[in-house]
Length: 334
Ligand code: SAM
Ligand code: SF4
Image 1: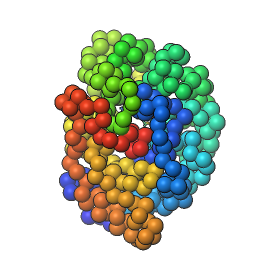
Image 2 (image 1 turned 45 degrees about the vertical axis):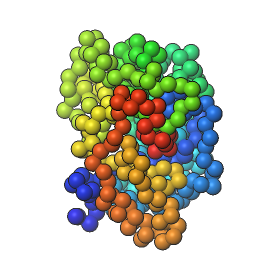
Image 3 (image 1 turned 120 degrees about the horizontal axis):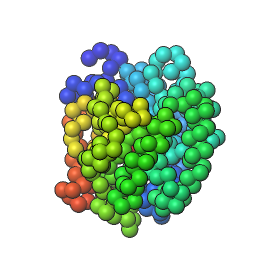
């Protein structure tokens, strides 16, 4: 193994880390959380300083890309301290990229700061352009605030990709107009299938579920979708939308077709390192850091990567399960 590369037992180079900086959120999306979510006590969270040490260690071990997510990353107090710290690594060329996945509710305040810190691309989750539906899906969100945030992000110079979860009978009829709108705004767009992660109370994921292949069939009748030369090691298949000049990603996380090229691991806000989105095996990096400092932390990272599994086990159709993986997406951050 080269000294500065993390390589798993299947020869995959793991150079991408997603970090959930908080499990808290100012929305309560129906496919993600129940309305009465219980969040972790603040004392259980890694401090921002500890998260920075974990990031530094990953970078020293060869990580090239870090994505901050949540919960809603931009509601964590003083989050800009961490983002600025990571930005210094980008500016020095030690880290290729820092990206954020956000619901957009705070972008009107943060966009300029993010750009100044060195962020160039963000993912913004938006499932509908209808204000009433938006409130129905997010329960607590307001569409106009997110649209203002998107405007601010565009003006700040951030490249934007929209993440849209396909929801049967809720937004599936709207996806083509959203794709058109995304093209007009010069946003790429990724459509995601509902995944069985975490309890969502009285909502039923099977009722929400619509397969992305069904969506592809419909969209390909209205748009000229050309298989893109851009393919990432993640779960998305990309198409160039000839009509708009932008890119469409389709994520079918419930199939295994992407595991072979998986290059990522995920850390929760309490310091648990999950080696696969669809598996429960994890390593507690908080314990390693607090008991043995950075050296122990790095050994724990190396040991964990050494047992990264080949792939995940969840299948929404097979188990008809509402929560095949017990933790919420907001814990591991998607
Ligand atoms: N709050 C931020 C946001 O919404 O972008 C970041 C965290 S959120 C958990 C990350 C992504 O996961 C979002 O695009 C969201 O739509 C998606 N997501 C959440 N729960 C999901 C589920 N059960 N199935 C599929 N996608 C889900
Ligand atoms: Fe919050 Fe994102 Fe989950 Fe929606 S998807 S509840 S915005 S964490």
